[in-house]
Length: 168
Picture 1: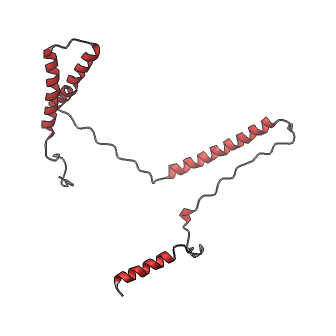
Picture 2: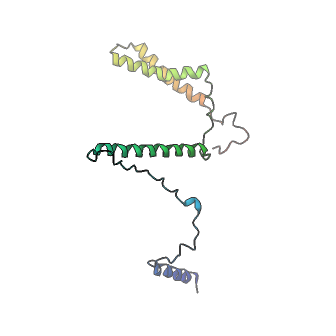
Picture 3: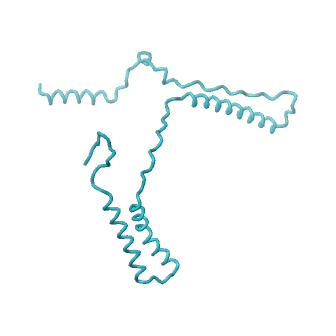
């Protein structure tokens, strides 16, 4: 027999048994205890006393609501106890402090956003923009962009340690 005919035979068996029902006995397979759901807490039902008037349904409804609320509070207390003992949650470490920014970088950021911001405010306020102010705002934007790109650098950071990871 060739390997192709073996595969064809296996395929035919799979197709032939497609609609067959599984004949597994559930007693043969163990069910882990961790998969069992906890039993639902029992709810108390307060029967109205016979001393009360039978024609007052509002009192009956009010007592039924009160008993349901007290049961829910007890359930919430049980949930709080399990949350306190739950040790499987993840708390991330505190983030590292932000890096210190030197004065030329600060000036470049101010120039990058300050030039267009001045032009926007002047246009919205209806101010007459002189030629030198327009040139200064555009030059500040271009200069700030160029300064940030030049200061960006090509290499990895100096404090990366012994393992640089995937450096492209």
